[in-house]
Length: 144
View 1: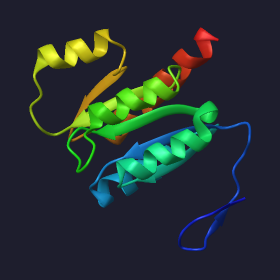
View 2 (view 1 turned 90 degrees about the vertical axis):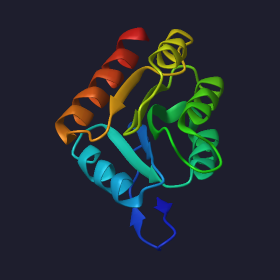
View 3 (view 1 turned 45 degrees about the vertical axis):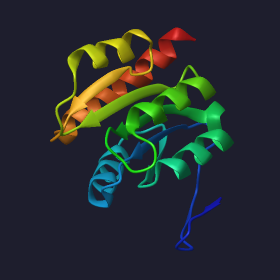
View 4 (view 1 turned 60 degrees about the horizontal axis):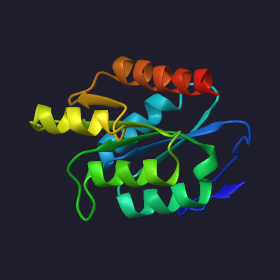
C-alpha cells in the first residue's frame, strides 16, 4: 500500500503501469488525474511540483508508462522534465501540453529527438486526453 501525504491509503496493483500528470496548476492536475482514473490497467499520479515527479519516476522508473507534463512550470520546464524522463527510462511515453504558443520548429526538433511523443494544446478535451494516453500505452505494448 502507498501512504499519501494526507494519510489516505490506496491499493496499487503491481501489474498496472504508472501514468503521471505534472502541472503546476493544481485544478488541472486534479481534473486530468480524475479523468485518467477511469482507464483500466494504470495507476495514476498527479504532481504540481516537477521535482517530486522526477523523484517518483526515479523510484518507479520500470513501472512508468506515460508522463504528461505542462510546458511552463517553475524550476524545471516541461521539455527539461520530459528529457530527463527519457534519459532515465527511454520506453516511457511522453506527452507535452501547453496553452501557450510554442515554436513549431522546436516542437519538431524535440519530437525528432524522441523527447516528446505527443503534443496537446490546452484547453484539452478529456476525451482527447484519454484517447491519447490509450494510444501511447498501446505503442508501448506493441514495441515489446
